[in-house]
Length: 367
Image (cartoon, rainbow, N blue to C red; front, top):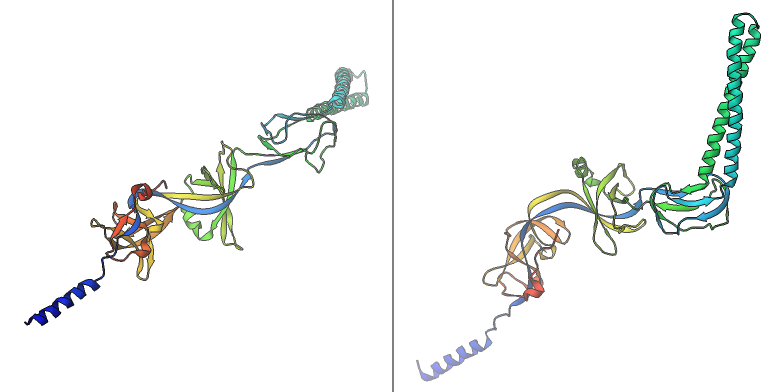
């Protein structure tokens, strides 16, 4: 080979070396670790908080309002005094009825003795049978009058008790539209105050009717219901207390209710909550963050980080989701590091750079 040919060959090799593309830099990614965990099977829904009992307190007797024994918005206990009407008219009525009872009791006792005496006289034919029957009738009438007087005393005593209006249930009072000195009328259309029971309380929610067979399968168990305020906060835990007896044909849903102790008062009547009905718990489920799953033409897959810091695709099947996590089966194994952020720049075999642990060492949170 001549020197000129060798020179040309060297120039060509140098040119090829200069045009060869540099290796692609590693792709920064965020990873999480696939784990086996116990995962509940839950049905999500949106619910409304409502009191188990709501009572509109009304007066059963009329009278002037002497005292309001609470402040509007107070929590009251069952049997606690709420209002005091002027009791004097009812005290006088009770005293009058009691006096009439004493009179009628004496007259009934005298009539009974008279009937007993005439019974012995008619046996000796000292009085006629007609006279004896008349005395017996008068004794029976006296007993009836006495019974009426006793009932009048009970009614007067009850009216006196009604002058003191007590809370029929425990709960929180609403706004108060009457004030001391107002004339209260019995059984008015406007209640004196409304009381909502807060402890326990219930949440009303609906789920698609196609879940009904699954719910019925587990209905004999104590099913857990969790309710989280729509504005955020710790969820409250209760139990399923009601399944409606018919599907709502207009919405295709079935109405359910959960009962909650609500000891901390987190759940408030009329509030909206995010509800999760737990039907059963699946042990030893393989879970990863839902963001790790990529939908492809051949099905779902994830990127798994290999020991040499390269990304490899693994086919997975998502059986269901639970919160932010997916329960999967397929080629992923417990302990595999799956990419949860940065997948768009990855290809099979791409080199990766895992972000700092403080940023990306994401283990699965509580389910």
